[in-house]
Length: 282
Image (cartoon, rainbow, N blue to C red):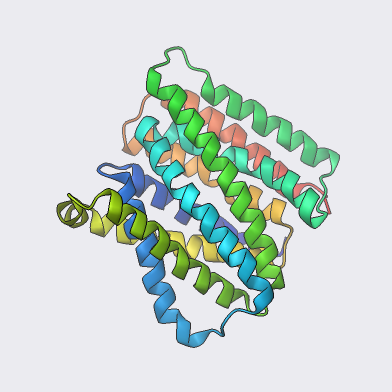
């Protein structure tokens, strides 16, 4: 992978872990996610004069990705309602490269080498270890369930945006119009859901939500751009090294339990995705 692309995707991973920590750090995750999505829309509005209208071939992918994100955001909110950041984040992010690898093979002809297959096995084992604890509570199983749902939507929109960015005449136009739609659709949903308490909830969470939105915008914009010039599986895998930072934030800053075990498991996930990144797949 080109060193510049490598560096920018790693930056995107850091941004992504930080905005997820902001969502989990307290309060109404739905509202924080909606504020973040709306922030992305505001950035997109300011960027509109600098990009062309997307070509016709790109629009099915933009609309498809926006629809998937409308499922993704609730899954993220629910996984953090029932699970700890250091628990559900590595599961949702660590499982995604496996699904992206399968989708990239089917839809884009991107294959895995033997070392890539070994990486998938390592990731699966690490994810399984995160679901096994000495003490389980009712919320733990639900947190894992929604984390796996999140990983499925991540894989789906990654494949869609990877293909969409490649057929777009201007990948930056694709990014801008995708974020424009994302914030509007999810924002309307949350406004309806929180219509009776929206104003006080917004006042309590707008700062962290807005910061998370800026981080999210640039994190995923970098990923979409990278996938236009690099195989999707490798970009997705490298992006998920963010689980290391998320595990650290969850256990050391948010005071979540089982820090050593979860950090060890997250490290295995990261080792797996790095091995996947370094594999010689097509």
